[in-house]
Length: 284
Image (cartoon, rainbow, N blue to C red; front, side, top):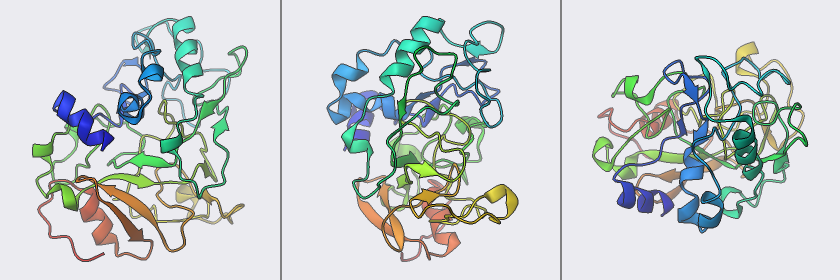
């Protein structure tokens, strides 16, 4: 409902992330997410009004694995965070707010964290930021490629600086995933937050053959050779899964909530995450 109301107001869906730190197409970084844009539509208008969008909402600058004490302050130079250090810090602190609708009640994971992708130890006092149980469907979970530069045959509903409209969902809104579940904590890169993007946390990459649904082992880059340390943690950034046995919930473009089995054929989730591939989606 929130997504459709946003589209009714702005004639476009929000982006997964705006001017992400990982994108070379965004020299002035803000890391602002679509979840912030949806705040007025989930009864959080007062929180939304506190944001100053002249300043970045997150501190990620594109560095691999988010080394601590190196990202903030980084407001000088050609490639930099938008705004001032004080303004950025104020926005980051807002990201510590718990938004009930952004959480799956079945997930026991920690809702707050201080990962260096979003909260640096040079900030004093260091703010905690809040995780989320849900991810926008994207083609690139690192947000290093602009949505506008992605192939229209593979493009997902959301992405870096995306501006998708109803008319772009050629396959039909009932055949396109908008949002997928994820766990609050991950085996690696466990610094997802609803308020800013970081290292491989721009959304759910359902088209990836290297990211099985509900994968608990770590990690995609080492062939999943590390055993899971907790049943409540998915493998890595960009993965989709949940605490529900056998699969996860997905929100379709028409607002319907469906349950996607983690045993579903790869071609089904690939086709569901593409909005204009022209392929017929099988039963799931």
